[in-house]
View 1 (cartoon, rainbow, N blue to C red):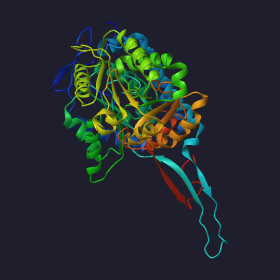
View 2: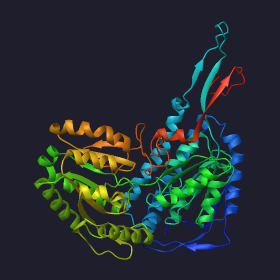
View 3: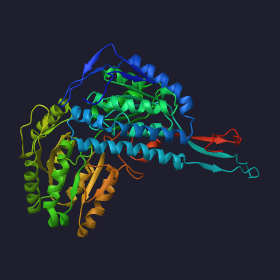
View 4: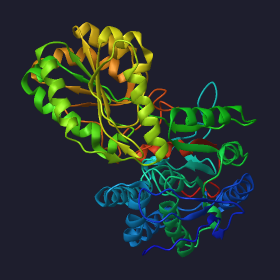
Length: 504
């Protein structure tokens, strides 16, 4: 074992033990002991974050960029440790963990470059017009400012990119907001090592230690006290619809309601148009099977539904997908709870009236094997449950009668992270008829690809109408995600020597 764990929380630069502990449940390797979080620790971390905000919130962009880059350096320096414990805790392969670490440090460095450029400030200036009639205009300037301490909930399925130093944390720190992270109990050791990296970076950069805290484990009271703490000003969350909605409601019920940016999941439907199906249904089916089973289907962008026009091409598509999925061996899921939920979801789909089993398997313990079902467009439209996410490698083929029914299925969708069109040149008219619908349903619309894999960039949108996310105007991936933790302030007739440095 090359990694070293304290088995403690990190509260404002101090490693703090807990009165109660829990054991990790790794896919393989040793179990480790970690402290259970408490509302008292939440209060301590939130107060330290507020204290830190008075300096960090008003720090220069150069100072914050240096911190982000230093965190990235320290995470990379612990790459071998992170991969070792990460594979043990999650069962994910080394290549996946190494790739995810690259994404994690990459988005930290991207945010550093983004804030140095300064465009995110959205600076505006209306010069004074003292002689304007009938009324003069004052000098008006606008700039985006950080909102204050932010709570971040680590995700189960991305132990690095959506967890302790993931996109939410990177965006908040870039904005100038201290962060209190509630670590996920599925990978507490991975979370601690990343927190060690952040701790070293914070101290090396001379930043107030309250800028970051990690609270491990804990029951619901920890999450509840975190989103309801009066010093927390926004929440970033990636997880289940049920858990996210409960926290969203708590945020709304506060004496001071705060924004809750929850990414909650999606079935990410694909619409396979006739010419594309005729020309390459075999390749499409094989590609779908590969995307559906990537990482045991534990991606929020997993394409769980394929909508096809009934006929011989649909028959061939289903048979090829069945063969491809049948060749996939059992994969380890991230937690026992996820495996149980996957099996329950598959049972729910199988027992819905009008659903036909195409490929059923037997999976037990923490293992997942693919399922494939099919139904008609009429039946899908009549059964809301068929549009709900099953987290894992499960696919549902919806056979529609014609393009009119395909559009009806699209209109009946709930909000999605992604919608995909598979089309050839002869499908352009049908695709144009679907586009206005899909734009209303999803944060990202793509063609001739598969939605698994989210590029971290300036243009990416990872969000969508509810229940894909709780705020359709936000993204949790890419540089635009920084907007979640900023608010506009207008400065009227403020002297130049009093204005914030970025406006003066």
